[in-house]
Length: 160
Image 1 (tube, one colour):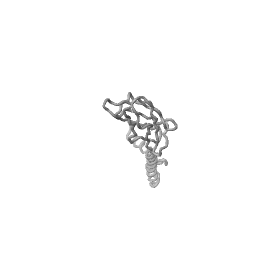
Image 2 (image 1 turned 90 degrees about the vertical axis):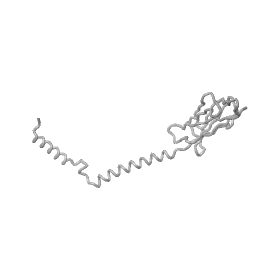
Image 3 (image 1 turned 45 degrees about the vertical axis):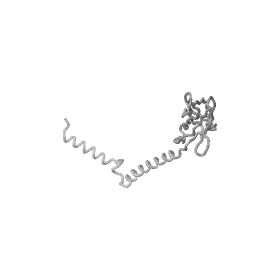
Image 4 (image 1 turned 30 degrees about the horizontal axis):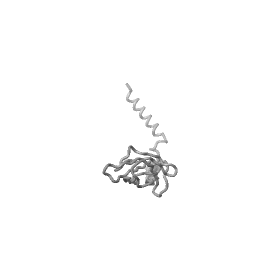
């Protein structure tokens, strides 16, 4: 068992050692400590603002099909993906799915440098259906500043 007087002496020696340590924050002037804390908080806020500005600069993309009106049966669609200014978007994935018209599966393609992609589709209509639509969806290129939040154009399908 440790002698209580030796324990007090050991604690007193350790406290004296800590008081003599000039590197401790306790020895810093109060203004310097406050400046350090406020500076760190301001830096954190500024970095969050800079990251937020990048998120606000995302451009909406849209897909423009050619032709916009098709008949039933096998054919190709040319799909052009553009940003808000009408500039082509390369590397986007375009998805064509049956809306009120039916497709056998889903057609996908990736846009080239000119922002266009070509897909083969075979739209069909129901027995008593005069027209229908194909839906178009765009997945913007990864790592870019593009988003697709709004509804895209549709392709109108009519009976031949």
